[in-house]
Structure formats: C-alpha cells, structure tokens
Image 1 (cartoon, rainbow, N blue to C red):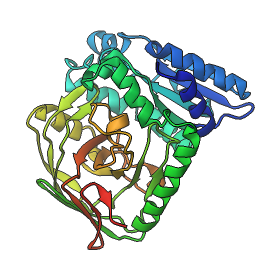
Image 2 (image 1 turned 60 degrees about the vertical axis):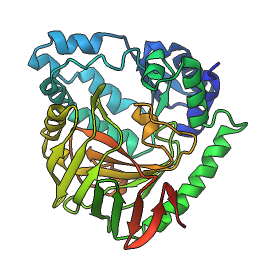
Image 3 (image 1 turned 90 degrees about the vertical axis):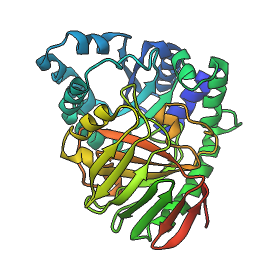
Image 4 (image 1 turned 60 degrees about the horizontal axis):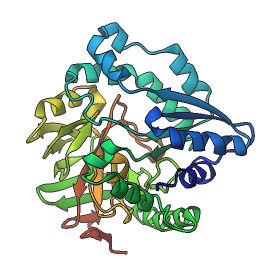
Length: 363
C-alpha cells in the first residue's frame, strides 16, 4: 500500500516545514482524499491552520465547453485573495483523466493561461521565491495507465521516486541536496554552456545567472539543478526525445531552432498546431525560461507526468516561457512548459570543458 502518512510527514517536515500559526493552503482534486486528510492532520499536529481549496472532476471541462470568453478569462477575487494571504501551499497532483482537455480548442487554452498571469505572478512572489510551496504526487489509475503500469507498480514507482522506501526519507533528501549543491557550485563558474546530442547542438550564455539546487522543497519528488540563460543568447537546435504534455495534450517529436534567444522554427510530428499556438501565447513564450539537468536515479522511466519525468537522472529539460526568479532570469510569460531530452548519448560542456557525458557528471 502507498504510505500517504509517510509522504504527508515528509511534506510538512521537509518540503514545506509547518510551524505554529502558519496558514497552509491545501490544493488538490478530491480523488486524493486520503493524502489530503493526512496533510490536513499533520498541519494541525504542528500548530498550523490548514485551508483546503479542493476541486471536483469535470468543472474545468465544463468551463471550456460552456463558458464565454469573458467567463474563461475571469480572474476570481477569491482566488486572488487566497494566493495573496496564504503563507504556504501544499498542492497535490492527482487526475482521474489525463486526456480530459484533449478536445478543447488551443485558442481557449491560450486564453485561459494568459488570463491567469496575475495569479501566477502573486504565487511566484509570495510562495516560490520564499520556498512556501510544494507539489506532491498521488497515485491514480489514470497516471498508472499513462505510465503503462498497474496501479500497484505505479505506487511502488512513486515510493522510490520520493525515497519513501528508505528508513529516513528526510535524511536521503538532505544527502541529495549536498550532492546537488556541489554540482551547482561548479556550474556557477561557467559563462557559456553547450548541449550536444541527437539532432541537437544548443548554445546558451549563463553569465551572471545562478544554478539552483532543487532538492525536494518545491517539488516532491525532486532532483535537478537549473538556471535561466540570458534571454537573447540561445543559438542552435534541440530535438526533444519525449512528448511535450500541455494540459493533457501531447506534442510529439518536437524540434526547436533558436536564434538570438528566440524560437524561429518549430516542428512536431504530432500536435504542431498546438505547439505553434503555445508559442503565440505571448512574447516570452518563444524564449527559454529554464534549462535543467535531472539527478534523481529513483526515477528510471518516462511516465508522461512532468513532476517525475523532468527529474530523471539521465535527462535535461528546457522550459519555454516564465523564468524562475531565483535563477536571475527576466523572461516573463503566462506559460512555463517543460520539454524533456534523453542525454544518455549526449554531452554537456561548460566553457568548452566536458562536464557531463552519457547521463553522468564528469566531476
């Protein structure tokens, strides 16, 4: 059985440490009720004030089917108040149907994403910058099916990815944090980075930017180091090994070509229309908001769930759109779309020095 209590303890002691008097938001679909209940309990035991904001299947689909443009782009003052006043957020990622938005017009998805920019900016300023947010997984049949596993296999997969199979998960995450800190220290010395692989030769400038150690506080599971390139520096081409997943829809075999930091050519074997709609979301959607290297060897397969996939220990991922502020990035956008590339046959160079080869760091 999946140990929801152990995950809730990890979330409230390590990911978002809960202390006396803190207002902690719990966001999630009621399909994750067992985990929601345990998180609620742990917040109470630590003297905090849990504030659930729960969703029900079908509401988002109904909005896109029956909502007018004004309704789709409406920003609720209650939602604004919640994100403005809550001290920290524990968000639970759970779906009963990962394809629920597959038939929604790309223009409507674009409308909605653009309308939420104000909420995203509040969230980034109040929670992401201050370490007051984490995203937890909850195993569902839908996620298991997407990953081509049984539910029992998927529960075991999440357990290993979050180090819940270890006697002391908190210690395991602290150890990984130290390893990643050494990686970040080395990469912070670099000015120019080059990523080479199948159909890929991408060059970026990272001078003055910071490589950030992602060690399980913002996402669980975690395991990556990332930075943001200078906005006009990206040059070259990258082909992504795995499908890009955008609001439940797949875009396959994506190839992006960059010049002066901007996508000048975008191709996809499947979903090219959606790809181009996403790139038109706003000016920042055409630029790189993040480049990252995964380190979590407990995640050993692609599951179509970016919460796990972007952390794979032999992959890099590139995000189009909004730049995480802690890396020093300035790119603004209503989207932040992660795209994943297998690097088991690739190389990474820092100022012409080989620092990563065949899925492993060389130092």
